[in-house]
Image 1 (cartoon, rainbow, N blue to C red):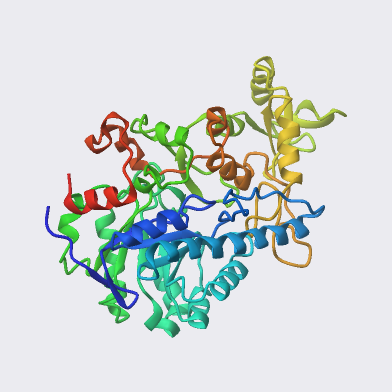
Image 2 (cartoon, rainbow, N blue to C red):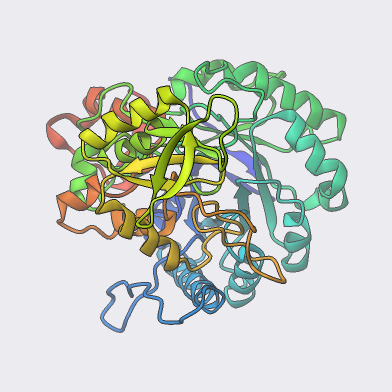
Amino acid sequence: MRAINAIRMGGVDVLPLVEGGKGVAVSNGITAGHWSLGGGVGTISGVNADSYDAGGKPIPQIYHARTRRERHEELIGYAVKGGVEQARRAHDITGGKGRIHMNILWEMGGAERVIDQVLEQAKGLIHGVTCGAGMPYRLSDIATKFNVHYYPIISSARAFSALWKRAYHKAASLLGGVVYEDPWLAGGHNGLSNSENPQKPEDPYPRVAALRKVMNEYGLQETPIIMAGGVWWLEEWEHWFDNPEIGPIAFQFGTRPLLTQESPIPDNWKRKLMTLNEGDIYLNRFSPTGFYSSAIHNPFLQELKGRTERQAAYTAEAVGDHVAEYGVGPRKRIVYLTHADLARVREWEAQGYTDAMRTPDSTLIFVEPEKVPEILKDQADCMGCLSTCRFSNWSQHTPDFSTNKRADPRSFCIQKGLQGSVHAGDDAEALEKNLLFSGHNGYRFAKDPFYSNGFIPSVKQLVERILTGR
């Protein structure tokens, strides 16, 4: 493999290796610090990062307030405290000499407040802010306020152009790089648009070349693009280096750092990664954000898939083909189905899915009786972890802090799902009941000789292996 040279990013020379930011305690100060020691850019997540007690144990993020608005404030408090703590840990590991970025989900509840307060309280410890999941127009304003570089995550040249024209051209000097995240291969939330087919992945090369062309038009020839999603071995991307169509290029590794000694995910999760087959990562649209996301297909996702499949449209009055009466809920309030759908409903009931729940789209989903109180409790316990949530109908926007839509039982509490997996400990069953984000190359752990006989590298060993190749 060719030698990997340093690249200019954020005003300094670093290896073109960026740790992908994985939220809810997964990319933390330990992983970021050690990745940075390897010469690349370490990334802490500002999405509900862990903070610790006097004994060094993670403090459970338990919510005590009665209302969603009050719990939302508790959530922001946890996020700020955790973000500052992780930045300090990363700084201590590098002795202040490494490059540390913070990743934030723009659609996270209170995202701007969290970024602002973490950067204020951790001045000098964080050198860049990476942000995606939405259109973070105000990211450049925050970067200007704190004099840090910013790295928007986009999935098309068109999206970057919109950000540039509206806001980023005013803070061009602080644009450290542009992260192109492959919407078909990246883990976590993906930037697929409504015009793109989730079942037909596109080659990233022409999409990144189009992004570079647009950036060049804006005078950003020296601003690096960071390729994220689907990156495993650098030699598989050698034709991208020193390529005028691509320009300065770095690569982001999100999935591979999951399987390291420093990674905070439970050992059961690490072992599971080494057993995956191609196709075990499921691109789905169950997330309460409304975005597509990629995660390991497990009973948790299978149950969500079943809710959507066991679905029938209804009307409040007999209209057209909707003439078959059906009683919903304990009071058996009458709605109308088609005769064909009523026949399907009877089949689902015979299988044990006897309880109907209404969705915002005038449909009913059918679930097992014990699932209803669980869904309703999760909705009632909402703490506003997203700016808007289709599962609970929360919105952080005044005056009523609601989307004014019916809460959607086809989705789930993402805060619960992610906290439950990263803090599962030795509970293998918990991994089957919660959300396990992963990029679509996760199956390669089982095929890569580097991980033979269950070998789990340190971050240092992983970075060295990436640099030297197979």
